[in-house]
Image 1 (tube, helix red, strand yellow):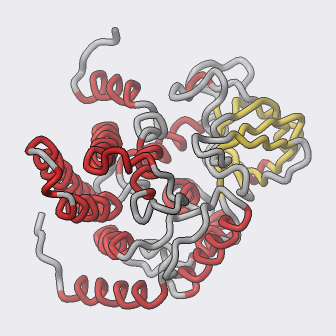
Image 2 (cartoon, helix red, strand yellow):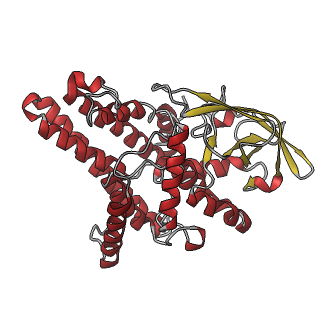
Image 3 (tube, helix red, strand yellow):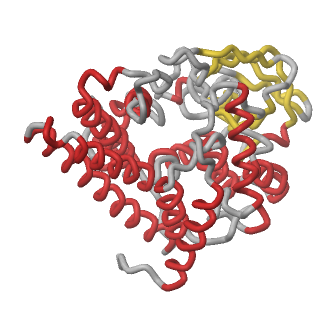
Length: 386
């Protein structure tokens, strides 16, 4: 792996940096878990898309710039460096989008990808169910075939973005006689479909980041099937690979947080002991290691390789690194760390508490780390099932 950037890559970085510095909102947008915040983030996604920055690695006909994954990583570094808004449509852009590229028909790509890039259509996940969390093979929601339609029944829970989203992607059991990972089909559906009910779930801060979604004889066209009938497991595993292995959490996000942690430590150096100093160094070093590992993965993909079960290693690393990074910041801030972001005396302290609360979910979403350790043991180390 050559860590030297080419002149073209350096020029791309400068172009991205110049645009972002000129266009990133001067004040943080409201949370996208509120109606006003959701609209503000849609507007930001549209602005990104109009300038060709929504998803730079996508083909130009779908709203991208046609650059490779290495240049996408460069863009991500610049995006997070300037503190640009969180991506409201990350489920679509970073998870479903790459899956559509691989499994979608030309008509499906043309229909969904441009509106995904522009923020016109926001996507929610429909994975977990009350009795099927990280074990997606236990899914029980059904899709009965009637003519040219699927008739959906069942329930999804912990559906990210579902409260303010327009569409949902998820898996449904199309073969009633099947079990585990067989007989599942990957289906796309608009959330305003008759028979679909979305009920918000409040998170720790009281905002509805998640929802449970109920299906009662909800009908969607079979055209909305992604991949082959009954082969949804393979499609979902591709999506999970993108989620765990590369697209969902780019190194730039953590490097920007580590840089802020270092500055926080410098301001409080006289109040910190050696243990905190060492924790800061460790957190910074881990973000750099994660960056190098991700560039190695991207280099392999650009050369025609693929992401396999090692994505589980990646997911464990970034999720636990994120928690450690924020725990270190809270240790530096001591009692002030408890101030919420909107508290009058919070200043820039509140973002650390918000980040810490969100980091606690990292070992759970995208498949719990306990499940990922099972995957590593069985598929990478060849150990027998317990």
